Amino acid sequence: MRNPLLFLFLFAILIGCEKNTEKKLPRIAIAGLGIESSTFSPALTHEEAFHPKIGDSIFNRYPFMEADSSLRQRAEWVPTLVGKSLPGGTVTREAYESLVEKTLSMLEENLPYDGLFFDIHGAMSVVGLDDPEGDLIKRIREVVGTDVLISTSMDLHGNVSKRLAQHSDLITCYRMAPHEDATESRKRAVENLVSRLENGKGKPKYKAWVPVPILLPGEKTSTRVEPGKSLYDKVPEVEQKEGVIDAAIWIGYAWADEPRNHAVVMVTGDDKEQVTKGAEKLANSFWDVREEFEFVAPTKSYEEALETALASDKKPFMLSDMGDNPTAGGAGDVTWTLTELLKREEFHKTDGKSLIYASIPGPKLVEEAIKVGVGGEVSAPVGAEIDDRYAPPLQLIGEVTAIKQGDVHAETEVVVKVGNAHVIVTKKRKPYHRKSDFINLGLTPSETDIIVVKIGYLVPELYNMRGDWIMMLTPGGVDQDLERLGHKRIIRPMFPYDKDMERPDLSARLIEASDKLD
Image (tube, rainbow, N blue to C red; front, side):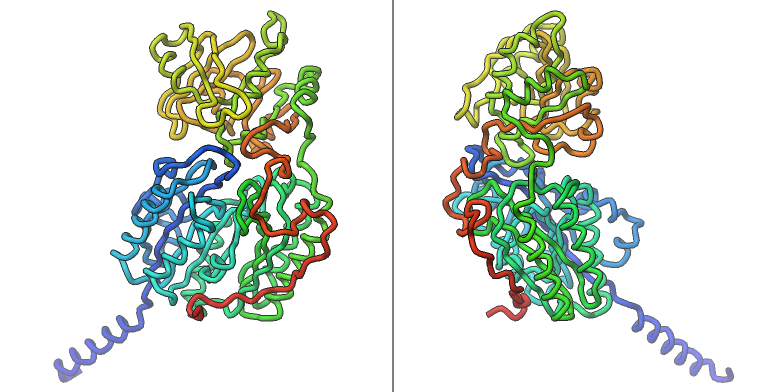
């Protein structure tokens, strides 16, 4: 080119055009609080139980969001605060407000956003506040605005109030119980969010919400067995329809007494007919099989279950101490079952049965055990500091066989040998879900006759480890006999409380988009 100035001018125009055509990445925040809270437990949950993560440390919660992952590269991420607690009692109002204010403050500092990934459980109860998740998302909307696309990820044992449905643009939940697809479900929620921002479609045109008047415990609605397996197999069938983004069935949370506690179906998408038909299909399918749900394993009274385990030669015979299951919201420190077990001579005779009990909180015993060390004798009370309705604290006397410190939940774990029984005592409550939880304490679960765990249905690793198992109908804040608990505030009629109720209206309610609310 003869004119160098013209050449430079054209070159500058070309570079500018390339810059202008560069695709701007969507800016997406991450926030959420998660816990199952039993309102029938006297326990209260405080802020530290949530182990809140802030900033980039949040990415460690999501394997699909590693630095070099495709999802991480498709957006500009602004992680604020995500707190997840073990299930427990009602959250104190002070803890809730503190975590919410921190979340809102961080969101406000980093405005604006195109989207927000809302990672919750859905069964949080807070002192003096109904529907905390609905309250939280509404307050988030007041900061980020109604145009921001919010994708909500939940546990299928969460509750979807109308308010939560209104402020969530995209929403999904697990499709497996036990929750082997938890990571997959969160990833789906994020992928749906990013895709809708990238393709410019934004908020779905339609959100169908169907409240289903059924309230059942998770131990009766496992997707491992029928009818839960076939019911949840219908979810991807609906999701795959043209014009549907996602479909979900929430069993709901049975151990809280609020109007929102019941099953729900939601379907989102851009095709009105497919969205509404899909939601109604799932809701009616759920209602049609309501009477077929049974406990996922043999379920017996404590006495019957123990006699069966003692007579068995299958190792380990696992017994679920269901009434005080901390992974469902129990206090975790009810001593009734352990007290009864230690009365049995089979666990004290030289040629008797071996037992592992996991676990019971006992900070006073832990303190004494540290003083005497492994091999020393301890005598101290354990349990019933929170829930003493069924039995008082138990004076545990025995030999310390292991002390392990540094656990994220228990902080300190101690094993006390009482006859042929090994009792795991913790400074703070902890569920025992993995074989390594026992082996790291010097225990041999595969060679033990009976293992009692405070849990409901067995998580996959325990299930695969079992020789046999029974779920025991024991007392506690997550008693499986729901009618014995005494719900007073749930919407009636409700199955199974009102077994002869007429077929409910299961037509789809179309929920307004967040930016269309009055």
